[in-house]
Image (cartoon, rainbow, N blue to C red; front, side, top):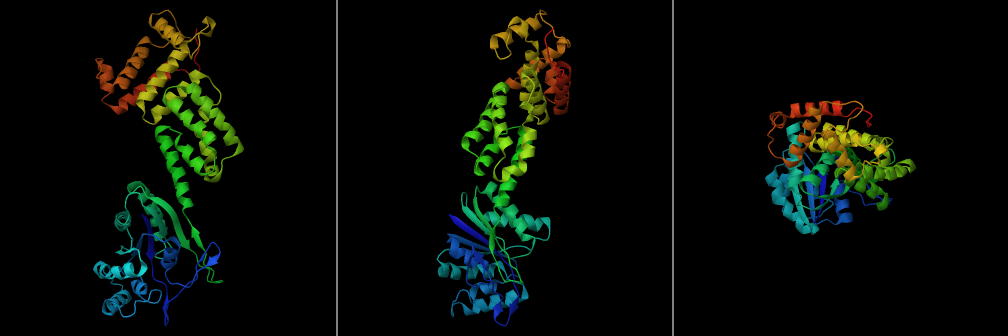
Length: 405
């Protein structure tokens, strides 16, 4: 269902009624109106029109001039006019009159009273009221032209809220500007601001869980080719399956896209994106695994932090002089078993207990079983201790440069 939500304010009123404005859409000027919602209704043809206003909004205008109801419900409309002048319009009064507009316009009309939104409680009430007017999956357009100057900002937050709690598709956020010098009043669509909000949200999501695949859909929406966006998706997949080698290859391919420049809103965040993906540039498998262990520890992903820390240590045991490769399973198994049997050491030999602590901690985190090791059992019950111990193990077991001795 398509829903148009429009805010009703109160424009100056003279002898001939409320002041009218000729709004223009894409260069085409519409007929004069005091309430832009009527123009938008004609253009968008919604299934539901929701008009939000305070007790002092120009509710009486909805039933005069732009819509001619003749003598229908004259007494109720007179009461509404008096309440509008006194700024004491009630929800029950609006509810009784809404069916008149529904019949006249041929779409469901809801007249909804909202608070003045002067404090946080009233502002939250507005978001709740807006959400109550939208069904899950609705296509929603917002008109923020009228009302108090702070309402457009709240409406923007409302749009973001509707996308989350109602899975609504925001098709437009309209604002009719007005130039008193020229009388021009072009209507602009502010929904692009939601795209910026999406980028900010995705950056926060990445900083929380290090999944840079969240940027792929945004970049495609901005015009990036799917084949280029897929480099990010594949890199994220490989990283999250403990394969930093192929993850870094995907990011290397995406670097070419960053060098050329990102399209659309993405260009505003190119610097932040480059900074968050720089781990793959230079370094070897050991350096990549060490970086990822620290990065996941910072985001509180203790399982991946322990996995990458352990794998980095094993990578540091690989001896190329013996023909070993750090991406070969048998070579890696041979290396850590040799270390465990005291048949292999590294240049900066760590305490063997720390190695076993890390390995057993990794296994406990991966399997979720209660450990028989009292040290690990204690760590699993205290996040502060767990984080601190993983930090210490990474510092002790993973010097900045790992090499075999």
